Length: 455
Ligand SMILES: Nc1nc2c(ncn2[C@@H]2O[C@H](COP(=O)(O)OP(=O)(O)OP(=O)(O)O)[C@@H](O)[C@H]2O)c(=O)[nH]1
Ligand SMILES: [Mg+2]
Image (cartoon, rainbow, N blue to C red; front, side, top):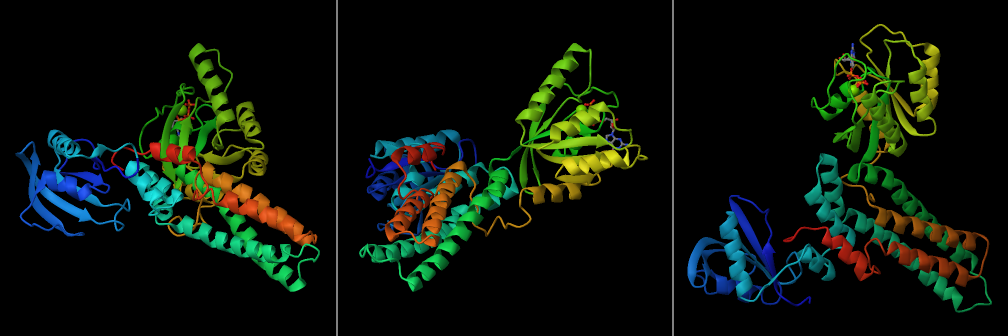
């Protein structure tokens, strides 16, 4: 029930300097006062009070109480936060004391869910708070922090406002079904609709970058034995994670780690060099490498410029056909032996070609730029542009865009206003799913259950 007062430890579980126990709900202050004893008789909002923390009448710690009065709090309800010393046992004891005085243990993400229900956060902002907590790279942090601040919600609200004005214009004409939409109104509607279409298209496009940052791109490093795949893998990860030797066939198992390159999150797999082999273990590794080629979204195809191309190189290039692939011409510190003709073929198959020396760690910047460009990160500002970053938002935008296109056709072909209106209303309800004005309880619960308890 929403009006129950809930409590949880909001800081990380483990030993630390300070821990915070958060209480939210109608009785937050009443519960806090039973546990926290301070000299001031009046607890005012937005002030901190030093005092003693009690459990069963005994002082168990000293700490700070902060009171946020509804609606000016994270959840929009009355909130009290007790900061105590950050030991595992003492924090648990303070929480138990709070629970014994009438608060109920909060579920996963329950504070944030209440903030959403009380209109303090939109659904995409709430989701983004979860992503801030989970962020592992700088660009993930910048993107989720911008969505949490409401940059995306603001853009969606702006498009929504334009759609509502279109709908009200269509309604005004639908009352006179025998008449066509007046020319001046039609023109005005067309202008607004063009704007809506442009904005929805830009949002839809932004998913390529948003997804590449937030979810990451499944990437396989492939090439013939000894091309320098593992050397490149280590260069991208900034660590010697894969074994590098001059023995062809060093890597057998697929090795996987995550790297952030040019802001793009690469879920990187190093693979066995592909060749005809009689060795049982190597053969299994090569099979796995081939499976990785199939299941990856991006291929980093490594070619050794110091050796003439052979069937193994040709197999790699063949695998890259029709795929998203970057050619890495490695070992540029050695005399070139690869043919010009083959280099031309590489360039015509792969979206980008980059020259590097993995051994000397040169060419990283060029590869970074290539990846950045491939995922549109050169054009977008992660901190300030409206970017969609998950499948739920993408599906809403795509559906809304399709409906808006339907409305556009109806308007252009002079259809009756009710047809235009029907398409516009569908577009609006699909767009509204982003910030879930119409999202069902199931979607909302699924989003908040990803959070930890205390958030
Ligand atoms: N000169 C030179 N040697 C390189 C370069 N990159 C890698 N090598 C050398 O090439 C050999 C093979 O490198 P690896 O990174 O193990 O190659 P690999 O493609 O992973 O090889 P397998 O796992 O056997 O398929 C090693 O001796 C590396 O030091 C480079 O840019 N220049
Ligand atoms: Mg290797």
